[in-house]
Length: 529
Image (cartoon, rainbow, N blue to C red):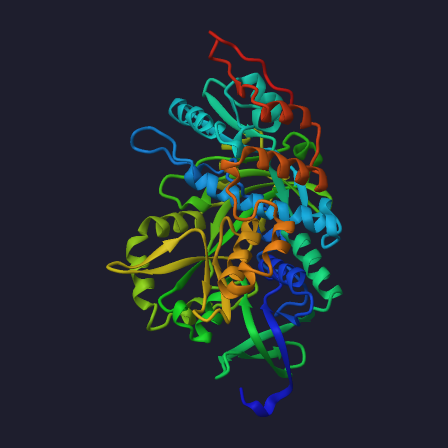
């Protein structure tokens, strides 16, 4: 692309690449702490949050480790390790506080359009797994972040709370639940659009239908970014003091183009997702929860099956999945050349290392790709035996690009979380990876701010940030009084009060949370739901 094709040149303090939840969050945070900075957002599609942040392209779970069993593994000695669960929940609490502050200050204008209270539930079958779930609840319940977790193995109580899953179920096969009313369903598309809207109303320039084609570092430490208008073909240059690459699956290729040393050796492996979905009111009325099970044997953690209440544009849906798909594209609206073009001399060893050591993942993907419609509904019937094929259709979700990290001695390792990459001088940063992803957008972007603007973050921004996030720098799991305070505040401001408030209050106060049909020596009453 020659400079003769460049039609204009501009400067900006901050350039955000991509209009998803990460760029939207960082843009709002920076606008709040530095209202006079110039911020420019570039998005290749014609609207905000049209890729991974779109509600149909992700599961919409407010990932707070309340129900995801891969965050609470059983150790060889039989104990339950809750370390990862606590870490993920702590991150979600940071996001939740920022959203509450944003509602109070008018940054966000409609909490109900993106955030709804939905119970989070873990579901198991069989005596061994029920024993695990009982131990899991006991391990979690002593932590204030998980104090509302209930253990339920009574069939009648199961049927009362999850009627769709109970219909036609053979309860001679024992089942159990961990249940908490503290969960949420989140429309990250609506959230992203509101955050970007706030930025635009306060001076942010947004270029939709524009694609970053190249970027290069200048001798003064700034970045020159070439941007092409996808509608007209016109190209412009934008000179930015700081660049954030929040482009979802496209983040890796753009960070590779930047040439920063920190991106060398990193690769990406794309995995698609599919869900069965229904909006039949006769079905959705019988299931008001997000229910997670164990992933299939040999499958990656992200494949844990779940039957979810979703609220999208005010309408109730049920989704079940995920079922893996595969495409070499890094974005749902990407290119078939994305994966092959991402292979570079500096990451070839990482890519090959993962290819040779992840045969179980390859086997899982091949098995998923071979599934018929009937096989998918059969998987759903493991959760809901009464499911009828004609009620459900298949929805293709967004692309995840799992991070491949360089690892000495074995080429590379496949990571199933998120990774923030920043240049040593703090002039450019990007986010790679997937789950828990969007739910941790606020702590992830605070990490970017801390690494890239360390002096301001640790000095002039601290007071403002603590107004937004009262627990900033504090582990709420060690400060139960502060947790109770910010939780109550967030619940009120975000409008998350529900018919379960009385039960939740009692549970937070320390009431017993077991509902069992087998522990007859000391029976406990079922909590109000």
